[in-house]
Length: 239
Image 1: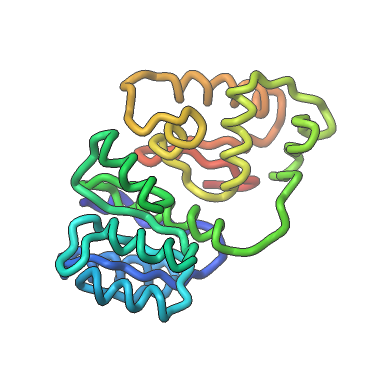
Image 2: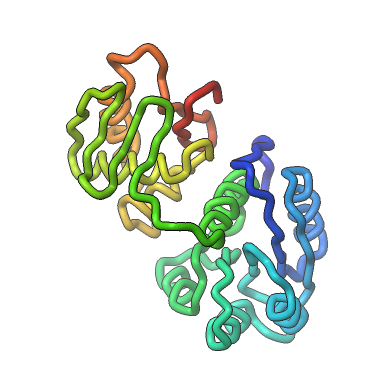
């Protein structure tokens, strides 16, 4: 695991439970989450983590898959069986497609393979945190003068209609859903292309380039930005 750079995404501060038996890793995550304004509690084994998750009111759970006393998937299955719907990010050294599928089917909401960049972990935790906040279903996303209407699938900027292909629309919708956040390539592959592995192609670069040419090219202020070494973000302001 390495920390590429420190980023703080969004304005919602969260209460996070980290269930991780590697003390050094757990303390690093706790310290880093706190530095980004969040509260983080630790549990060193599955049984302790399950107890805290049931008793506490957490926004997100970070659960290592291989845990003493009770493995991570069993922790998640137990929580789900008791009606606990807190979003869960699974951490694991097991990164094959079958391993990811098992984690998601056990009730995990996201799956991150070790080693990982802390910036990506934070981006994923922040994205999961947004899901845990009850709110009315948004029908419209707005960033600056860019508007995406989810009911009509119509996109405009400065009142001008922008015609997008279906994949370009899904890409823009996901980016605008996470406006102001850094969205990694892995997140885009999983949520826009439904890939749970990296096909080692430039498909994302091609679609981002096409999307940028449509929403930014003829306008004074760019909204779609590349964050070097991390991914992409859409925001009305500097990165």
